[in-house]
Length: 80
Image 1: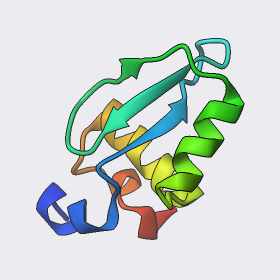
Image 2 (image 1 turned 30 degrees about the horizontal axis):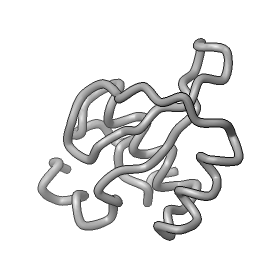
Image 3 (image 1 turned 90 degrees about the vertical axis):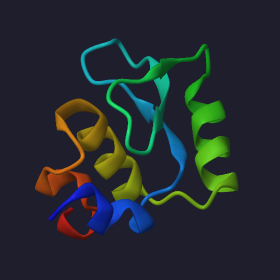
């Protein structure tokens, strides 16, 4: 599996809760390592993801990809 194989399954970006950062919310962009800080609340995150039809599996996959690379099994929402 490669990033090329899964990119069509993922949103362009989504909002995530960063693990180990006290509930901080960040934006994760498809195909990019790391994250972009926000000052959003959990309500802002939920509203953004819902408005963009992002599923929980996609959120989890995007977080995994941004942290561990886009070619790991966890970056594919079908594996979650």
